[in-house]
Image 1: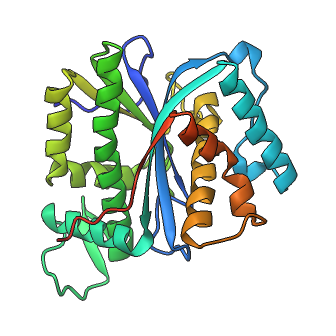
Image 2: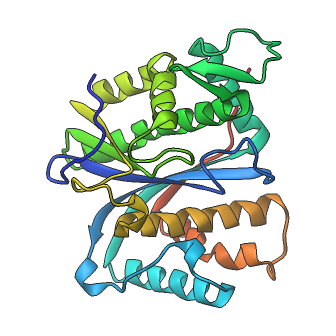
Length: 278
């Protein structure tokens, strides 16, 4: 099976854009919940859309809601036609899932391991970082089925998942993503890829990591990625509102408007919390 990173053509591939909240790396997060989303697009009419910036760069709840309302209107008008999936989990369960897949990949070997570090690809990293990368690898592999379903529906034989640079990586050194690849290739997650290829008649699964259209521009600035960022942030707000039992005056409830719209209109599916440990 061939995996590609870098420049990929939309003429050959069905693209999916992945983002996470509060972060891809969760070992040091103080939040109880997390979510990762993938969005594919059937239409983005860029010539008739306003320029947008990332969620974190827009200050104030009022301005954030204005952007959400604009996206809802654009989707209503079919200027944007997204389809996607959100996977959310409890942070502690996600880390346990990550540890489980690290053991499956023979990266850590003992259930009672007490060392604080592990060596992967000749890099010594903390167990916490390794388990975060394990969890991320699980979600990426799980998204392959979703992308396979989409590709089959539009008679596409190649899919590509675009990922922004993981914290700690840069364009020259991609240690963390290389570890994610090793986890996938040496665990049962490899079977997810093989099944996606077979079940959906795919002949290639590619990864675009930190670059797009033969350039090293940050994927976060790509229009589809900016939309995905807003969608994932809204779903994170929805999960926070529901699981922390907040009231409707909370910021989380207000910022869940876009996510609620996408669910109600069947633009998005939700994969609820799951554990790999029986």
